[in-house]
Image (cartoon, rainbow, N blue to C red):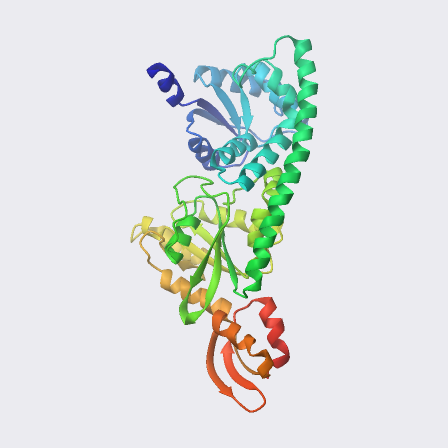
Length: 419
């Protein structure tokens, strides 16, 4: 029993391959999250046109160099920091005689380990099935033992391959049906929230930027907040009261990452829609990370990809408590993000300033309204979601001055009565 537990705790030794001109910090973080040990790495040279169609994607000599380096470091697997085709994956495994993964498979494994709710599990399963379908033959080759078992002879394997292909295709159809039902339930919940005309604010940002910690700090919630990549896969919504009496719905969302696999974007579309639907986006940036600006640009690209381009935005520099008082990065961040709000979800520094900024964005401009008595419920909604600074109950109508939250529904209802 002790020997089995020790074997389970043993870290898998991996050799990392980076593409030309990329930084390896992100892949290192992904493999660390899977509790793997990096024993070596290599950055590929710039590809030539002939190499782009080669059986390994690079020249044979360079491929052999990688295989030798992996063998010398006693690596148990090779991980590429970019997507590789199923055919090249098989070619690499035949050459190196150890399992070969790509970045997409690593992310899928992390998501699988993080999924807690039914929706998250279905989303991860759909993404994994879609990814694995063209790679089924890969599962029956020489690496099958390391990946969970062999199926005997080649002929039997081919029969099993066709059977499994049909099984996976059938399961994809079933998962999509189940996921559609869960998505409809989420949409129903969203519509119920929409009947309460509170503005909505989505917390978005790079994975591990501290989004869940910020939600907890602002609302007093107890959402899981770990110093790990993709600690949150399911959106969590809490009501938040901020300066000026304004209330809003604050939602924590799944973290972004550069080159997020498209099948994951598709699978988590309903989750990411929380960002699209938000009246305001808080883009959280880890101020302590040297790659903060690159991560911010990644978040902006993903937001554009999912169609979240119309909402107002506030950039939040989180984890400022990790910066030394004289750290030169403080001045650099100020230049890069001149309008950003610096906070620490851990210590609470800057949270009042952030609340005030959220209020300014959502409360809107002050206007004068005259509403008939049979529409006085609109005044009640303004009290709930904004601020009323002056109020007169006259003979034919109610006249009031106030700031209304920027919910489209309430704004349309009040528009005919604005003076």
